[in-house]
Image (cartoon, chains in turn red, cyan):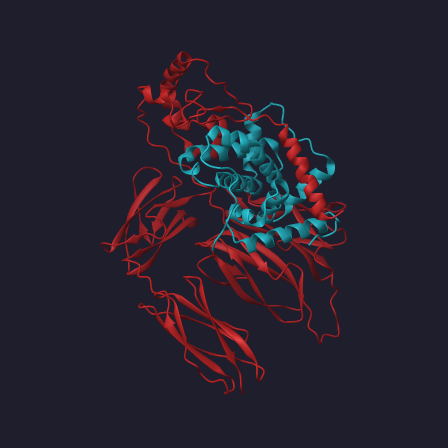
Length: 470
Length: 170
């Protein structure tokens, strides 16, 4: 059986199983949680009676969030009562926003307008190349991938070059044997996403060859705690599975086997996020790897609510920054202390330089930074400079040959020149002008190849041919 | 980047009709990603509540279903990462009899392996094999380029084939 056949069968099976589910009724806003299904009101009189109850109940529910009894913290943004999201079948299910009941009722809730829930922000880092398990004789490999655009990416601790759309790449040096390549995405200083692959480097001249297990032949998998779990305490018991015969080390400590294929070990934790890495060794050779992160303590939040990321400040040299934070945190915005509007909302005026300014709100618990949010705003109007590139023609015959390009790109933006025989990055000046000379190393005589010039901010490329005639 | 998605249904329609049409599919996708029917139902309903509050905007979109899938898959994956919603759901549900999805053993094993995949691969596999969605639509829902969605799908498929000892299809 092929994976396609099996997957389609599993898809059909799940569809069929779910088809047997009843669709919960809608009540006003109106979807009711499993086990909390509320019938529609039979009559308008019932609806009016319910409305009285609702008005009396506003104080109670607005404190805890109306949906809190149904959905817990997951819906706390929905919190306060909303006439279009009224309750218990008062509003028509088929016309939720044009209910005559709500339009004729005297309810003018004094409660604040509810915050519209946003699509949860999910941060991702993906390694698109090379493939996991890739084998190469070269001692370096170009790793590239995608990440959520507002993340910056490090690969094995080095910052990867990226463009404005979240594409990134970096060359990674390889050691002989299996190499773990870990790409991490950071939002400010906070790690938000991660991806990892393994690459095998076997030098061609090597007389001695390492054992060459395919990555899937041996496995290490952390089963507990879950990645991203919240824990409390000075340590956590990490459990997992591994191919029998391997030595499993978790954060450097050797795990003990509990039974065939299962291991556990106690790992000490520090407050905040902790990386837990399980490595499987066959002799001295690392052959398998798994990693998770756990949060020791409750998550702390700092969020900038205004201005919007990418906003332009057309007048003045300051901007009023407002936001919210977990109660009890100390918040600094670009080093400035904030004024608290209430226990969780703050505001501060931040001076701006001309051009793009990063505004970072950092939350501290004592002296420990526990949360961060970052936006960028532009002081002054954003001038759009078109991306133009002219090939000046350097030398096709010198050794090494070189080429010069000049033109215009995003002011102060990055311009990246790349070829199979070298690359170079320069920055355009404040008016958008740039000039770059690149030398091509190791080009075979007579070789014609392509040189690309990229405006990083616009994600635009220009391509030029080059022939080495030396 | 020009991304195209086939409209799933002519808009506008009423929220109720949209909800009744899409509810089970969203639950199925959430179940594929989180493995718990009670959580999948909750995830679906949370997603529909968000959709309801923004229905005035969504109903004019050609792709409200894709939007809800993105919300639901984010929530489902978030659940898998955090495992917190399960605890809340279990606490709230108390002694109520837990709903189950009647799947045969191979199918259950398949979806369990899907949940072990990296998030985007799991989403791509669920959307492709559960909903028969083409790569362009998967890319739209995952908010990535079609080429990236294709890579996620390919890698997910390859890993599943290895783990389930099946032939890889190309």
